[in-house]
Length: 171
Image 1: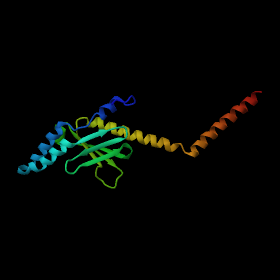
Image 2: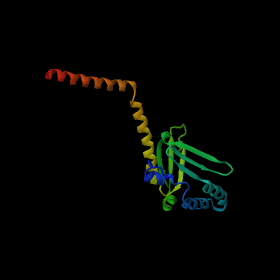
Image 3: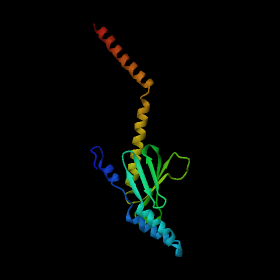
Image 4: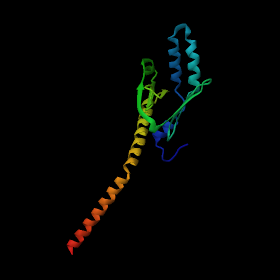
């Protein structure tokens, strides 16, 4: 659904729900690296690819996958601390990259890894914009403290007194 306040970039990102078919090719190539045991990770990757869903909205990102062991990760833009793009040679050949999103959690690993997108640079820029927008709004709200309000009121009173004094001097 298109919202009038949503930009075309936001609408493009909000429309992403599934990974690219190139991700399944990557999973197949990766599985063949194990030689005769390739079918073991291939089964896992098959179900991971076919159940993987993304959801971008105004509040944050949601990612879910799995059949037997369902996993869902939801992050708000305010929790995002850093974003990294990584890709190996096979991912670069398939025009893919992993977007690793880190939060201020105790873990050094990424909280969420978005994979299988051709628009990885666009998504990264979108996430940075949202992350900075949340921080800018939060810092703007923090500046409206009682001391700042008092200082603004005193500056206003001083300018009015100055105007009254100039008006009296003219008479």
